[in-house]
Length: 95
Image (cartoon, rainbow, N blue to C red):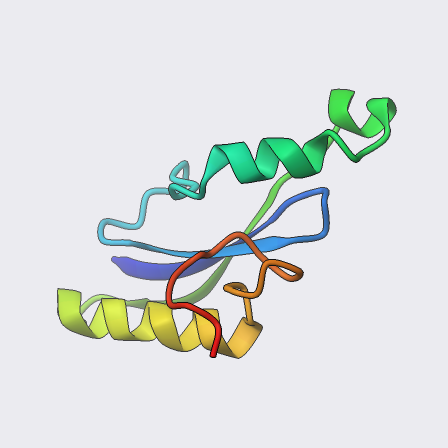
């Protein structure tokens, strides 16, 4: 099952990703340095006890890899997760 998902971090920012096999444990590959930098601005109590949320936004049993990639970009733009103030996606660049 191919999926597009959204990860919400305790920083309030999001990451949109794709998964070609539908693994429930896969959380994508955002730039951890950027996330770690944001975490430093959180209170220590939050850094020691937090929840990361994963939501499946779209899934398909029949989509091609090209269709999956196009859907990922569609959702990145829709949610503006490529805007550094909103999310952790760094591609496609914000217009």
